[in-house]
Image (cartoon, rainbow, N blue to C red; front, side, top):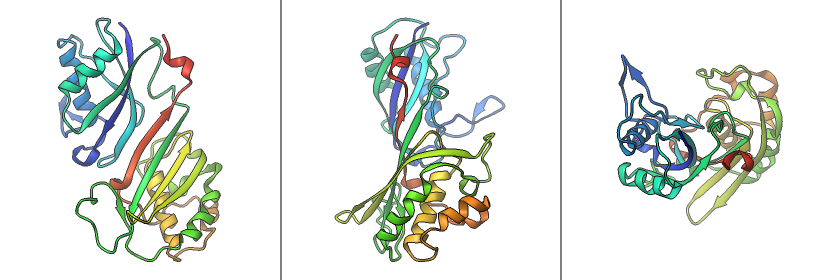
Length: 261
């Protein structure tokens, strides 16, 4: 059975996250993975056993993606562009298949990941814009962006990010490596855009980091408080978690040789 890798974009506003959640074998909520499973199996003429789509990142409720990656096996060989077009005709309008490639049988969307890039958008308007409320976080208080820019390098490198992991984190280690941490100011849109790149991220890590950075920008924290938080390894001291609505999975990186069959 040929294996395919697909790059997927979705508006996470009306999804209960990426991963299928079942009770007694029945899906409990609408999920991105559930919609992808339905479309792939419909295109494959409902094979037995059913095809399961495997995702690289289990994004949470309300989180968006420009570059989620999945893999799946089909019971027949078809050109990747045909797979892309076929799936897009079957999927709802809040999911789009951007690219499909045929890959080696041992390619795994999750386990072959080398790095991920996320962005987080923050609206700085004085009131919540009704047209942005599902697509940005919101911070209406004064911000000194220079303080945020000073703090960002403290996140770079390999650290134990236990203070930045939500209670639902189930990973064996909280050590992660961050290779990029930037902020872009968009005055015309009254937005800040944070960009983070690393080998992997903990549960809610980016949203907690954004919350800390906003409090630094507002003067509620010392400009180098991230250094202290990394040292104390205490989630409660990080406090504020930015809402899911501003988070975007931008891109997932692989070794290019693993993608070619």
